[in-house]
Amino acid sequence: MSQTCTVWVATTQISGIYPMKKAVLWKFNFATKKWTLLKTKGQMPVELASHTLLRCGHHLIHLAGTGVPFGINKSNTVTSIDLKHLHWKKLNCSGELPLPIYGHTVTKVGDYVYVMGGTTGYVYHMEVHRLNLKTLYWEHLTKESNEWKYVKNIPVPRYRHEVVHLDGKLYVFGGGTGVDAYSLKKIPAFDIDNHLWEKIVTVPDIIHGFPKPRKCHSCVQMENEVYICGGLTKELCILPCLWKFCLYTHKWTKLSVELQIPVYFHSADLTQAGCMYIFGGVTHYEDKRTNIIQKIWLKIPSLLEMCWERLCNLIEMEKYAKDKTVLINLGIPRQLLDRIS
Image 1 (cartoon, one colour):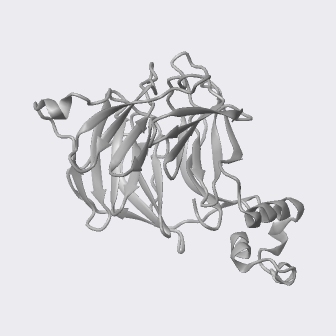
Image 2 (image 1 turned 60 degrees about the vertical axis):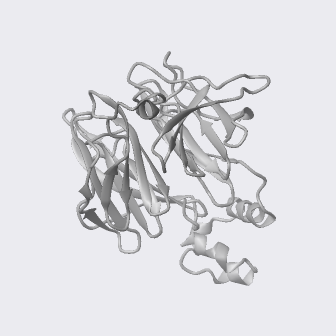
Image 3 (image 1 turned 45 degrees about the vertical axis):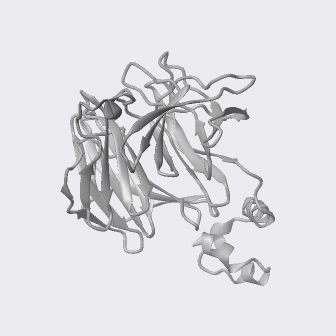
């Protein structure tokens, strides 16, 4: 999530019985609480369901996903947009490209982006590919092998899971298929150096035990701690709970708070200050979607952040987006005023 506290949403607007596709990019500013529909140039991708969008400096990178008709129109292309000039550009990648998929994950580690899991609409996968962002060359890291060390801990194929990175390992949380959701008692972990899988046995919360198996949830990472929220169970129950997992001790802790509106198929991200924002999702199984934003501080914010948040709740910041003289005269630091732009 950007330092200017802005969230970017790429989506497909649908209308009619036989839907027309229109890909759009929205920007939401947390200071002004205003949505802006951006006018972009170039060919924007239309596979915007169960896709991935990665922020790299002043660029957003879109990778794979499905469009209309869902599950049939799929992609494995990589497209980027320059957020300064709002121009989309298809990246010409080479090497061992992943299949056209959706419901996968992307995780940035240094100059590499790791793509894991997903589905073609018919077959679920747990393949791992990585893209070198400098050379745009793809590598397939989980090629078929008969060696026991490579196959003994391979996790069940899945989609709509979540992945984080720490100390050279990719940790996989949940996920499932169209009819199943997978346990969080054992966490699959992939070593990005030797390309071996292992299973991490986790420690339950002393009171609440383990989180329920889930898919279509969200996940953010704050240093060595992972926070998962929401999601859908195998029994089609939409979960309101928030859980914390320590990547060092492998212990689960259930938080005392819950989502005000339980959702799945949502997205979440974390600000540098430690505030998690949750956007959208489905609120009733296959029925109703929402465009609300929910938030929670995962750590005690600094006094500066507390004061700024209070000020944004008291003042209509949008009035000062073009002329910030009044706010400057009030003594508000310029690094905070930049968030209004």
